[in-house]
Length: 172
Image (cartoon, rainbow, N blue to C red; front, side, top):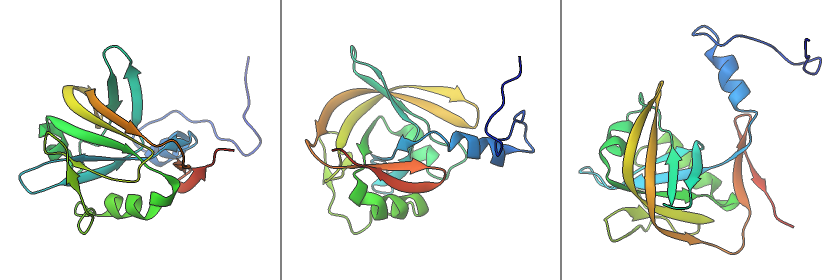
């Protein structure tokens, strides 16, 4: 049995010569957007990530997957504590600033949590975590963390990422 996509669809076998196609296919999955922050010897560090997922309620676990080739990866690999911030629709400028620049939080009024992790205000939710494991995941790492504290807003629209573009998911 052969299944076809819409007339404009493509079928391919992923290989090192067509990573752009695979990235574009992955981009068809609409996701929320996060900023992950951690303390470092160089000061607060941050990275944007849409590879975030809840894992377990008991114990409370989440994961995210940074690119091992990123200049920022060594900071997060070493960080025993970090915070994952689920961004609100009105935080798109902050998201792009952090995505483009490791010092993208410069100028933000940052508070530090009990473990010295910089935390952002105005997010839809925040998970303050302790790193419990890092697993191999190809060119990315899978970082598993135990949620020590969580905070969430009761209102607000979500910042989303789809096909390389930022958007928002509004609630009725």
